[in-house]
Length: 426
Image 1 (cartoon, rainbow, N blue to C red):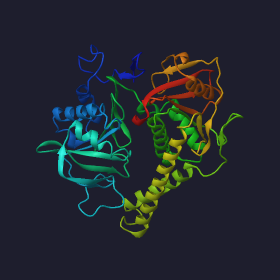
Image 2 (cartoon, rainbow, N blue to C red; image 1 turned 90 degrees about the vertical axis):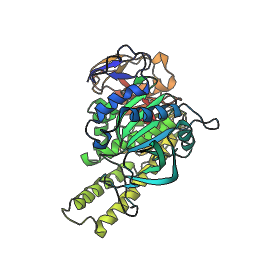
Image 3 (cartoon, rainbow, N blue to C red; image 1 turned 30 degrees about the vertical axis):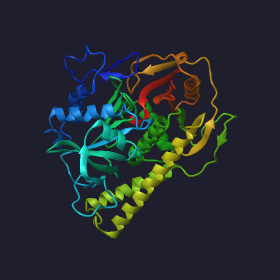
Image 4 (cartoon, rainbow, N blue to C red; image 1 turned 60 degrees about the horizontal axis):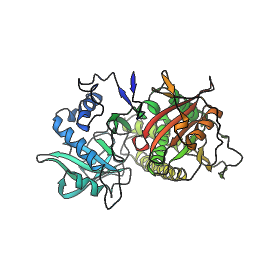
C-alpha cells in the first residue's frame, strides 16, 4: 500500500482508499470526513451497521471528538465509547451472540444499565470519562428510537475476532481511534489520518518478523503469536498513557545485553511467555469443545478450562500494568524475548554517529532521513540500543504520548524508525 507522509505530523494518509474529491485540497480532515473511510474499512463485516445513516456515524464520531477536548475539574481523561448500534443485549458471548440468561463468567461484553438512559452529548461523556479510566470499561451507546443514547457502562471481556461493537476512543485532545476488538479501523490525530500500529505490529513487515523471531526464541508457537503481539501493544499503550514518556526494549535474546551501569537489574524469573503458552493450549481445548469434536461445551472440563483461562488472562493484564508502571521511571525497561523484565530504570549509552531513517510502510521499502537532532536524548539512546542489538525492538515515547518504534537493520548500520502516534491507539 502506498502512503503519503505528512512532513509536520509524521502521520500518513492512505492514498489507495479512493478518497473523496475534497481530500487532496483539505489540509486537515474533520471527524465527519472519516465516515466514508470507516464504512469502506468495515465492509460487510458488521452487517447491522450497514443500515445506519451517515448522520448517526457523524454524530458518534463528532461528539466523542469534542468530548476528548474537554477536562473535568481541571483534569483530562480519555473518552471511551462502545457503540452497539441497535444491539440491546446486556451480555454478548464470545461467539458474538447475545445471552438472554444470567451473565456468564465468560463474556465478550457485559453491560451495567442506566435507568433512565442519558443523552449522548459532550457533557455526559466527559463526566463518564472519570469512571471509564479502566481500559476495559466504556460508555455504552445504542441507537434507539430517540437517537443515540448512553445506556450504561460496558465492560470488555474475552474479546477476540468478530466484535459486534465499535470502540471509539479519544485518548487525548485532538485524537480519535476507532477499533473493533483488537483491530484498529481508523486512527486520526489533529486532522490527519494515521498509519498507526495497525500496519507495523499487525501486518507482515520488519517489526512483525522481528517480534515473531522473539516469540519463537521464547518457545511460543504460531497459536500464541496473536496474544504475544497483543501483550506488547498493551504494555506500549501503558507507557504512552502515563504521560512521563519512556523506553521499552523487547529484546531478541533470552539474556538481553544491559549496560554496566543499569540501575535496576532483575534475575531470570517467570515471564509472560509462560502464561501465553498456557493460554494457547487452553484456547485450543476450548475451541475443540465448542466445536463438539471431543467434549461438550457444557461439560465440567470445558467450564474449568474457561475458568483457568480467565484467571490467566487477568494475570497477564496485571503484569502488563506493572510493566507499564516500570516505564514511567527515567531510563529504559528491558524485557527478554519471553517478555520477562530484566531491568528497569536502565541508563542506556548514547552514540553520536547514527544513521536513522524513517520508514513509511511496514516493509520499510520507502524511507527518508530521520533527524535525531530534533529529538531528545531519550530517542538517541533508544536508537543506540537498536543499532547495537539488531533483532531487538525498541519503543520510545515522548512525555506527551507520541510513540516511535525502532529496529536495527542487521544488513546495514542504519536504524529504522516508525512513528506510531499515541500508545492508546495500539
